[in-house]
Image: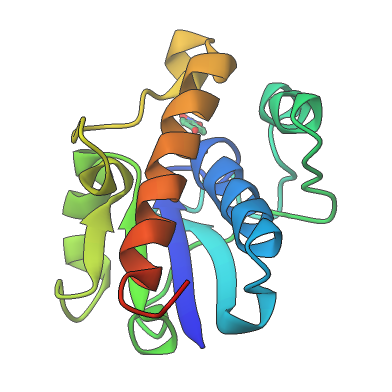
Length: 152
Ligand code: 4NP
């Protein structure tokens, strides 16, 4: 089983979107049993809060539920608990370098696409649809990367 942890600043917008998009792609591929997927924040600002309503609505418009998800902060122990730690933007990677005991497992979601860089932060842009499209393309690329050579 591959364990994937998506990470953003607050764990109420981008990383939950990635978590639930990835869960849908994995389910559609019939690979639920091959993956454990979760998300967390670099900060503790939103700890315990549900997914931000505009992000929840964007997911719902694509038939994706994020019911029950509440924000949590990543810990050093997550480095051993997960195989792949996927951040949304470079600022997240800088924060992770201060929290985690290593960097070998960390990457950026858009590294798995033809357009590497940061996922736009909808907290500031207000454009949750654009963030969804970026997240979806990153998750497709990540799934292809993780299943390459597995016969899927
Ligand atoms: P997220 O979005 O990191 O995608 O969950 C944000 C959530 C909260 C804040 C910024 C971004 N904030 O400044 O509180």
